[in-house]
Image (cartoon, rainbow, N blue to C red; front, side):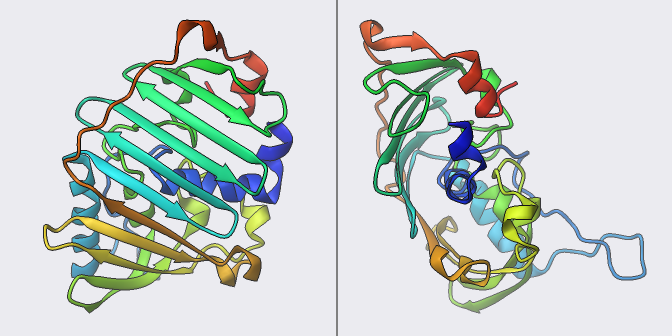
Length: 253
């Protein structure tokens, strides 16, 4: 797991996990950038404020989160009010991660990940995942979009419900992104976003080709609002406590 977490793919996976509904942030909001030559923060544009409000709406109801990218794909179902979630990820061609979260408890099952026994669910105290890319339902940003929106800049409304601009990936809290891995190219990455007729963020696409052409685009879709989410704890016979070495690799507290 530690080798995975420190590789370029591992960093990209952590970024994808953050965008797919995990990762930490305070309640979504605009992080003002000081104006040049001034200590005063600049006011957010109307387009930025609209995207911020759209991200906040993802906390109001159940939501399905689907992510597609060159190296990672995932599907998650989140119920912020009931504090429960499921997520399944495929990383590359050989690794998968399944995550279940109910209240203070989380369970992780993986294949093709060093140090994780296939077929077993690893129980983790959810509090220890706070601030990591595997925090399933962070307070105020359950769908994980808020921490990306708050680092957007030069946001323009390009049509009815359509937006574009840049995002500073080096400052996205809990994304697992390393400045060194980004090679100094992550502070102004292009994105596009759409908002549905209910004012909710429905899609966010980050174009990572400016960092590395092989990374392509990463598109997250938010849908199925209001659909019931069912999450069950794994059978006790299949559960073991996560080893401390794994928790440390995940960045747990």
